[in-house]
Length: 493
Figure 1 (cartoon, rainbow, N blue to C red):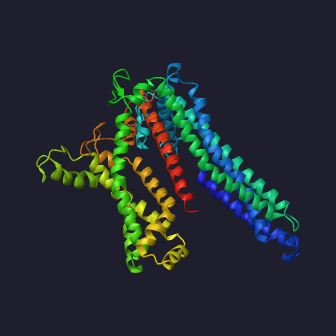
Figure 2 (cartoon, rainbow, N blue to C red):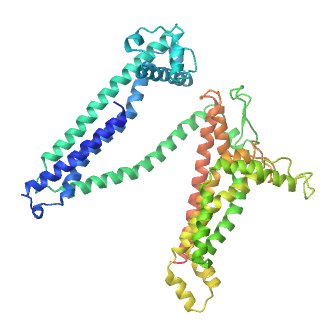
């Protein structure tokens, strides 16, 4: 039974428990709802939560733990030389998992029976044709050991799934039954439900914190692994970025400075474009535009935020880059030789700035509109004009929120990848010329994790060091910006 069926079964038990508990509570009061401690719906919700929450929590935990346990169990039968190398172990387990999934799919489709599967010989050519028939692509040939391990993997997975289904349904049924049995007119159902909902809200809020902690620890562990293989001084102060996967680190220059310079340079160009245009658009829409104009202009402006970044990248590559080359190239309209190709920091920065305009504009517009009307009326009452009110009252009051909108746009610019890849090029450069090709940290993270390189090589692990360093820099910038916001906010409180 698939996990989706288990989910539907749990939801069915939840509904049954809701109506049974509600009916039992009303019946215990002799049909007089005034004798109930809580409203009837609380009794039903108590039974529904008792059936759903433990069962769904167990189902989520089981689906996470079962693959890890099966992988650990199966990997013990792999050769010692494979287990000793994490990259080879990962590839071997991935192939075994794909073969096991392919065998299960073949049995489900009727291409082979379970009895025939147990007698299947790995040396026969029909193994690969059988797996190819169900769309399974393998990274290596299926030998006898791999086929046996795949059969064991499939058997363990099927057993685990059956056990999971039984246990989850029993937990849901037991929770529903206990909740219904303790239901009576004096039961404090509302108190239990409110505490349970509070617990769920705290758990939901904790997901973001735990996710952040998981990301940070993942970056830290792999970053430490990288610095155990590559000198930290060469990484942080190196001015050359020339990885060589064939050299496995010995012939690679993995300097961080060209990448962070390209990231900040392109982001600065984007913010120079987005902040003035976005802020002036927000001021016009909130303070000067009529309602018909605002009703049309704001949705059209926000459409820019819904355009995929790959489209922006193609626009930079096919339109903005050639246009800038026609102006600033050797044979361009100005007759200067500032730009030698269509891919440049200016190309990516301009297009990225266009993408960021709705982030600044929409958020700033909402923030300016949130300034109390009483502050405007007071300014007008003192004889100030609309422009003076805007400069002396509205913008200072909305400044913390506007800075937050700019920070959001800056974070979006620092994390952008596709526009940089297509518009700025792939050259790691420390040039001050905005018309030179550059690249960013995020673009290189993608390139270092793409390909056939070994996962435990410095050229691959450097992606985590880049991500961790960028995370620390962004965190420091956010803390500094929050300090500035608080200083300005204190002047107007």
